[in-house]
Length: 308
Image (tube, rainbow, N blue to C red; front, side):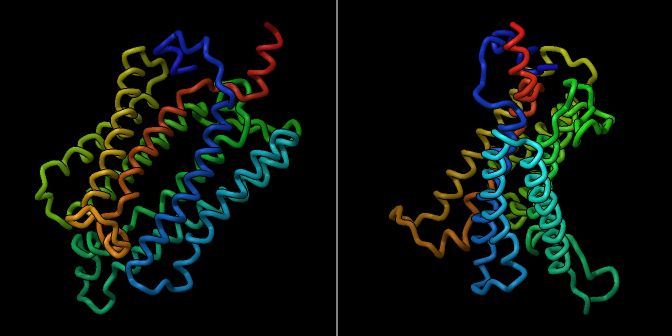
């Protein structure tokens, strides 16, 4: 089902230059680049970046460039591009899981009494446990986009040659579930970060509320076999709210880091409010909107146009 066209039929007349799969892979490449930058800023807080902390900093830009290269290769040889993209994206999943593990270990006090080695306070003040998992989410979404679903909405992915694999859900519904999980992870990360201020500013409840809305709405749309036009429009509204909240949050974090004279001090941006963190909400909102585009691959779209 072409969800966006179901909500707004006029969209069927608009032809995008790239297919949904291509746009998601492009977003994955951009995400890898920005994740590398964001983690470099986060790891710079200590003043000394240890060897293992360089892994995501180096991997992010490298993965982003390789995904862009695979996109260019796909114009002539999609199978080769798919192999390259999958290697990078599997690596992204591994880097995310390793990062989450290292952050959990940093929050554990092995010398503390049993039952006090890992507490809520330690989780709040430890390195963000959920943050690195964004690498894993991008890897999963990218892998989903790298393989062609034929026929659309069948959950049947074409592998090499005549090999195929049948999934329990269509690619669109799988992407919606991933958007829901990604929004939940971003929500929890935001709550843990804002918990350091005890939510003294009531405006901090805005991203929390919108995050809950985005998580629930995306999961419900993924669960529906035949969503109505109202369901899809509600989902689109929730994704747009995520985009707006993320951009406003970034603006507020930047304002928090500026001096009273409005000057930029590098140290304040490194150790102050993370100005890129709120954009994760915008990122999930945009990925959520991409998930409801035309499910046909670029090849199937071209074949349909030739038939007309």
